[in-house]
Length: 419
Image 1: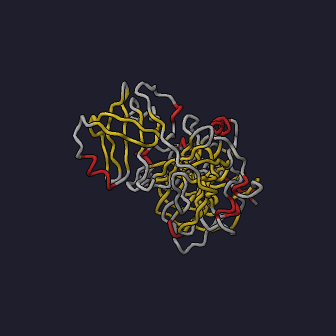
Image 2: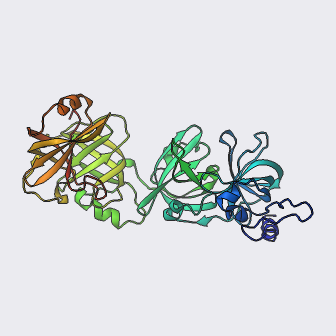
Image 3: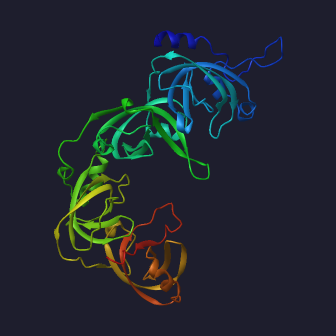
């Protein structure tokens, strides 16, 4: 049935981008293939040109009016489906509607739909994260592979963060996963779904996600054996090399002493080889001096030691680490990245802030340092300190992002008050 369907559909398309006229009435004939709709310039697509296509529903969610259909030529977003029509992935349909430019690519709207039966979904093309981000696969039925970083269930969906190579993407399974979302974390998976644009609160495009109809299109290829804290233990200094040589990163385990923490779930851990930033949404806190094991995923940037989506447990209490004194002539090297440091500097002034963050610029020897705090109780006091004052500062050292405005100054994060 499916093979016959695709053969018949492949014979129907007119020349791409053309809208032939009905000679007897002067009205345009319906466009009969999706690729021709997608090829329309925005001005033409906005003209409500008639469309009549046959295809298969690749993804449908009644409550959000999320609907994609694909024929032999391409896939497209369809808006305005009658909620009383019973549709699912694999429904064979005939759609009559008109074109619209859409927010990102042309769509079909004002539709009437006729259910013809069920059929096979089209073959899913295997793509990369780069392909997804480029936007060329928008509304197409695709396949992707990667390791699950985290999975959460919300509003009837399962939202999955997946890493592939050195990049990550987000997949939305349009139903809860049986057995719980956390069961697939750290597993190598293959998903089939529709690539679709995502938008921010202002309606601007923010990227592309994959919309997966249901759990049937999520395949676990390989699960990691052993428990969470049985992941391979890695020294902090070796982590960048470890992350770079792994095609599909899995969780690793680090152990060390907490040097500082921030109020956003971030804390800093030091072992005998170096220091690392731990990013965790786990409830509970740690304090300086705690000996902690943290299992998480290495960050993509080899210049910055980060463990993401980490889970942790306290294993003991050690000595609260002393800060490293910053030399006035220290260069912008990465040797102090994530380390707890201290120095005295001259306040030059404020370099910006927000309701939850304040940054001050200090000079220290031959270098400038941007000091940032998230402690709301400190902000009124800091803003009243006059330029030229000498400050003794203790915090976590960061090299700036080369693309940021503060690329010429070193960066220091003040830890939380409890730290």
